[in-house]
Length: 338
Image 1 (cartoon, rainbow, N blue to C red):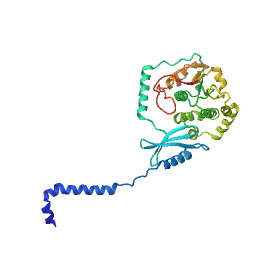
Image 2: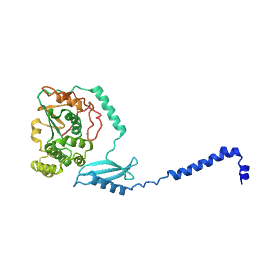
Image 3: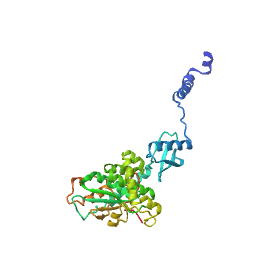
Image 4: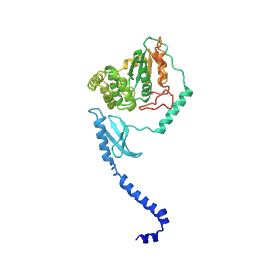
């Protein structure tokens, strides 16, 4: 047999060609047996919908509230979910094997473009901060918004770092416009924020920070450890006192096509508040840029003697309108108004 092989394959041919081929084949066979892993089975759409709904309702929703997946499609190799979470629809993603849930997706290119545009606008179009003419030792700052107005949420994101910097050096109150342009969900969120600020004020800024990022009240109530029993009692009492839900249902007290919200109605009338956002400092309506640095400078101009906290270095980039992070692509002072 050896003689036969040597006759067919001379030694130099065997060493140079045949042996390497044999070694390659052997390595391939070893690799297949060593590294082959069983394929993970993808969930079909029905299975994915069931798994996602169970997860969301078990771990993310407030007790008594239920989320429903209205639509499921495929996008970027993932399942894209349209989820109805108590009168609001949000988009989330689920890996096809059902192991990873993504509450929110950020488009990298769009976010980068927005940040670059905002940075350029800030560098070329920076305007001096508005100066408040009425001074005081402890300025009163009242910000009127609609909780789902994208421009209201924009200035709220800008002012939160200012509140953190100034602390009790100012008297700040978030108030609500006397009508709601974003449906019943806005009336309910207004009540929620009003009551947290009124009775659980130490947790209010944390709750608002969470809500402005996600737009999901239920999970923010959990993450900031709001006393839900206390909150529910306050919401119910306030709702009945100002007839918020009953007026919405009976279409009483509407302003044009929009339902009224009378909780801060007296102050709305006092300052002639026209829409969201409206900033009042020491009783004076002020137009300010919505980045944190400008808001800090504007509010600090209302002190008789500015405290050291006014020297805080805050961002001069205007936040993006609406929920989530990012920077604004324009410096226009848009608002929600009839």
